[in-house]
Amino acid sequence: MACVPERLATTAAGRTAAVAHLKAHLKAMAGPRAQAFCVCKAEYCHLHTPAARFDERPERGVPWRCGGPVVLSVVTDREGRWWRAMECCSRCAAATPGATTVATAPPPPRTVSTVADAARPVAAPAGGPLFSDRSCAGGSQMVPAARSTRQRPARDGRIAGHVVSHGLRPLELRDELTELGDRFRSYQQRTEPDLALLADLHTRKAAAFTRWADVTGDRHLRREAQRAEQAAQTARLQHQQRATRPTDDPDNDGPSAVARLPTGPAMWEHARSVLAHCATHPPLSGPQARLVVVMLTLRTAHTGTGNLVGQDLTTLALADPKRLVEELAGCGWLAIPGSADDLLSSRPEDPVPIAIPLLSPGGDRPGPFTFGKKTRPKLSGWAQKIVADKKLRTTQATAAARMLALVLATQTSPDGHLGPCGHGIPRERLASLAAATPGELPFLLEQLSAADWLTDHTLTGTHLAGRLSERILPLTCPLPAPVPEEHHPV
Image 1 (cartoon, one colour):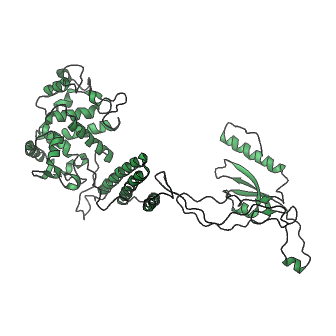
Image 2 (cartoon, rainbow, N blue to C red):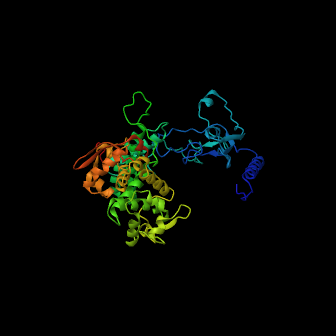
Image 3 (cartoon, one colour):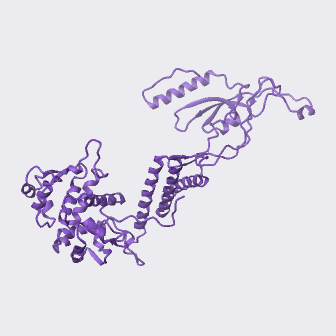
């Protein structure tokens, strides 16, 4: 029906107009034509035979037989956005979702004179209905043949929005990718999460995508493999945290679940990235200078600029804060509008704007950190809680001890033991992050033990082992668990 398109102001008005328009057409028609022919199965009709989903294997076709009188049907979608009038056989109308029969053609006249005639096949009379699964008796008019029942070719698989071609080689890689896609879709249907299973799936996906990238040379697949590996580490760490039991459990023989101030693995990694950046780009040597550099970096990490007051520095137990500010400004790492005395005497109601040129993004050069403006104050507040810990202040812990406390908070397992999986921290790495010499570590660790920060620590020539106290666990940033050795690439 070639009708002129019409636009209306509202959806309701459009629906009303469309229904009225369709009714006018139906009224104008005398009814279905008895001689119309039904070819719904000739060319893969999608009205009542929806295609299989991409994650399902195609089923063998079922032979179809049209039949019954010709009817005039109206088909509409579930939302009532479109309507269609069609002539088809009654069987097809009954099998079409959303179809309503509005008129039926009268059956053609048919007479049988003898018993022999009744046993003989009756040819379709002129003007009678024709169907797609049989041809006209006289052969003068051929109706399209019914759809073949031959099984369709195997479909391609899908995983993470990528198509796994059926022709991908080697076969074990294709089968692994297809199976992983099915397993991920199955996991999404679960009512309860299984983080251990999810971590295993992401690990397998990382290995499979790495090999897929090697086979095809597609760099996008390699980036997808890296994201899968990060997702596996995150899921594994979350599983370790959820596996802990509450302290009121009578059978509790492990650590309790902890609500941490840094609220997730992404923020934990950002905290470690700041400490690593300050260790690899130190403007000055020594633990006191390192502590000031870390705190100012967290204050200005997003844009390279921020505000500072004297109290932010005088509470760090620095031996000579004025000298440190002057040295940082003198080497060009820190930019302040006035003198060091002006900065140290500033009040919260009148902060001093500062800038760190090394952290300022410009042109095509991004900043050294990937976190945004909402994460920066959270990290800064987390570090401030550590260095201003009440027991550290009560025991008059030095700035070097507070810097070491900041480092230890980012190098623990979920239950508070030092190092990944509680295996300890290499002594050289610890000294590098805290800007302390290996000989200074025993004295600093004694200060942290006196402040109830560290318990049962053991310092050897190569490692520091031990555990942070229970009260410190909410401030920790647990390390990701290592990938189990049983996971091998495809």
